[in-house]
Image (cartoon, rainbow, N blue to C red; front, side, top):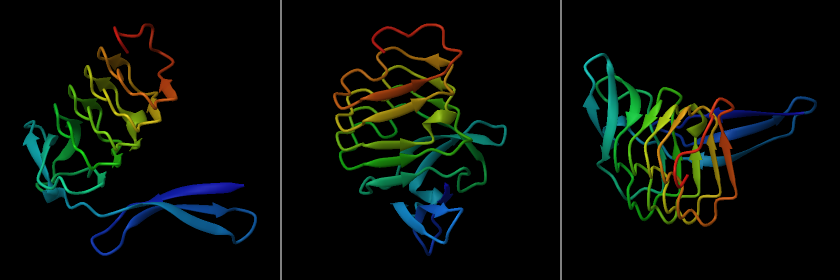
Length: 174
């Protein structure tokens, strides 16, 4: 019986997923993630102790762990329009469970994007948010009750999409 624990990166050590056997002492690590300081992102305050991530200061990274809090201590609850749009190098994005909303084309046209962790916590996803990501294979939208149109259009490698049980209809071009 294997257990899986996500160890978040710190300023001094990479993050990873720890897989441990509950019956013996065997364990291994994978899915390494580099530390991304909250100051690597641009934020917009929503005025109630929360904020939206609206941009990137560093576009040279291949892996991003979106922080739960901004550099000002506000809780990150949304990812704005086009934050990662056409990011040529990004391969993996980890979204914290505090984020509930994603703006239009937020992750669109990222040719190397293979993995989006934490997408199951999203509730509202605008149109085209994951459009034309040629390397993306799996997308978990099981928490989303509001989906925009043309959400995954052009995702040629997408082989699995998990949807919310409460979702009654798919939007156009989903």
